[in-house]
Image (cartoon, rainbow, N blue to C red; front, side, top):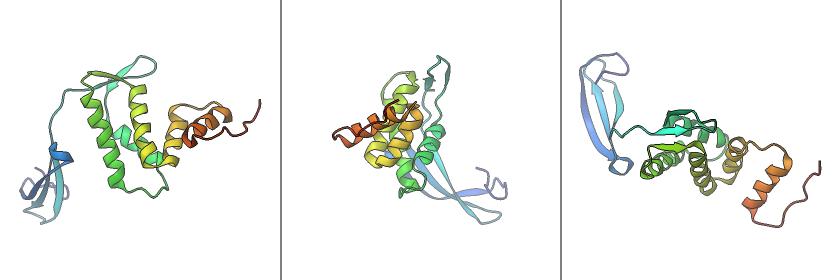
Length: 158
């Protein structure tokens, strides 16, 4: 493994332990040249998962897109990066457990929203507002009312 800092191939594993419920191996490495340490992860290679977009296009599943969306939805919220990574890991795990080679973006969005609803209601509403593309205040209020599970607020009439 090449050193992240100096590019040397002279690195050794200092510590190795399971991560992600045993699906990943976390390795601490040390460079023989610059003596700096860095972490690498070894994961099981899975069959590619295709995402079917709303317009019918297909693209390879990209976990980073999920994590980036979750990070945007939770911006300025008291949620740690570890929790966000846990949500992304949980979504990814659930998608691979579905046993389908192609999954709709709608299914992915619904899974993310259910995880965010448990984690942080504000993040859930933020994500839902982008994902569901609320057209007006009434659709936004309908989603809030579902979340609150109370009597509907008075909505603005068009």
